[in-house]
Length: 116
Image (cartoon, rainbow, N blue to C red; front, side, top):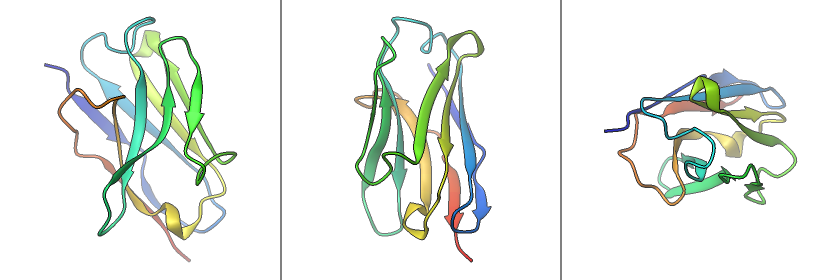
């Protein structure tokens, strides 16, 4: 069974940056494996997909993060990344990684808090 472990969250001031990592057991991040995504869940809201990367490397973003977030994948490391720049308070949420559509058990997520 694939296990997903997110890390890299924290408390950051508006305008700051964070880089999230998602490590996985198993070879799901190898080329031609599957489409992957970063999701987030803000307090009192449902989980939303904010960034995805296809098996072929095509990237797509939610309008709310476009131009600020960058998703990447390093297959040899079996790791998915999310570089987040220009953070705003509305980005405060627990961030998760999973396939797109979600096909694995959710990890614990990593908390991102944007506040002055």
